[in-house]
Image (tube, rainbow, N blue to C red; front, side):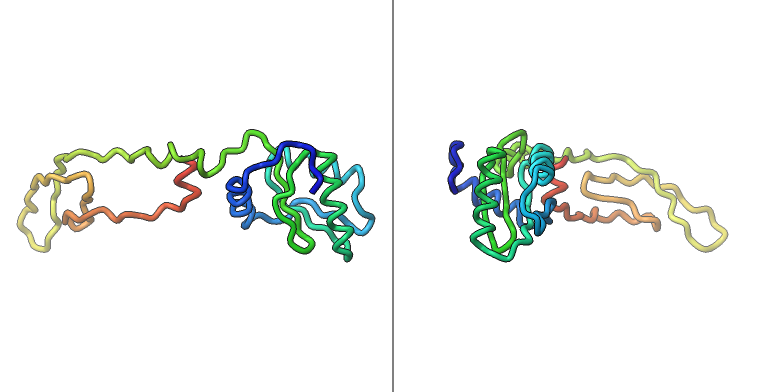
Length: 164
């Protein structure tokens, strides 16, 4: 890679490779090679995503390397990885990486304190159903039958954790 811009660290490259694993190619370089329209499309996608995958439809691996170098030189971006016909390209900008999201992990969900709940358990029979007061802690819930049970803890995906 003959990129004139400052190189990026190995740790950042590893993290970007991991982040790009689930991405799908957003730009395809066709049989005609790289044109101004393709450059413009790559530039637009780099502005909005900073990390993209590009698929090259050329059969020759030497031609793929030349295209990758040309893209990096003209658009001032970094080639993160080249696997066969796929290129992973990154340009610095307003991207928020995993190591910058640590402050989101430190946020704790506030636990609700104990509260008094009035429960009327419905039973069969003609007698009046008594109304009783139950203390429900922050990790408990009241079922439809009037029982107090622990809350079901639902798993939250890593993506949703960071978006909150």
